[in-house]
Amino acid sequence: MKLRGAGEWLFEKHGTAKRRSWRKLHIGIDADTGEIVAFDLTDKDVDDASHVAPLLDQLTEAPTSFMGDGAYDRSFVLEGVLARNPNAKFIVPPCKGAVTGPTAATSPTQRDQHVLAVDAHGRMNWQKTTGYNRRSKVEASISRYKRVIGDTLKSRDDARRVTEPSVPMMLRQSPAGSLPLRAEVETSHGYAPYH
Image 1 (spheres, helix red, strand yellow):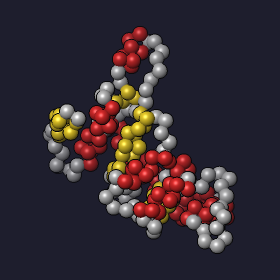
Image 2 (image 1 turned 30 degrees about the vertical axis):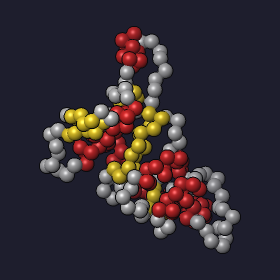
Image 3 (image 1 turned 90 degrees about the vertical axis):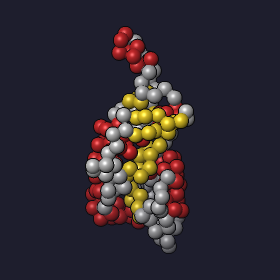
Image 4 (image 1 turned 180 degrees about the horizontal axis):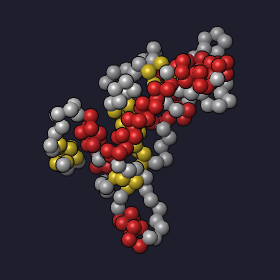
């Protein structure tokens, strides 16, 4: 998400080159309902996989499954998910050229099983058998939320920037017919109306 401020205005008006600031919005979505269950706004330099634990901490229930792209093929992500639910399905494609762990022959991890399945049957077959293709529904949900939220943050204060994308997401998820005409957003200075 771009940060909108004086630098952006100067760029539009005068065309001068100025380094733009970005923030990264991490979103966790329930694959069955399309509902956002966790989100956080971080600096652009924060690695997606390293921010899984704070998103998992926002969940009210232990995850039954975790699905992500190859960037999440990290041992600490698997350990973090399984620490919250030892029976959770970890559906992340192994990186190309991935090798199994040292215990793959005696007690393979879920990742080891994925590596072996991709090697034996190919990546496309692995996607079908694991249900990884459901990820396309999640990507469609994220695309819808991006259209609602937009790609620019207008607040200049970091605390407000964290709140800014949450308001449209909360309004978007309200049950049909119960959308509030006005919402109150808690800020560091009290409550502020959001129209």
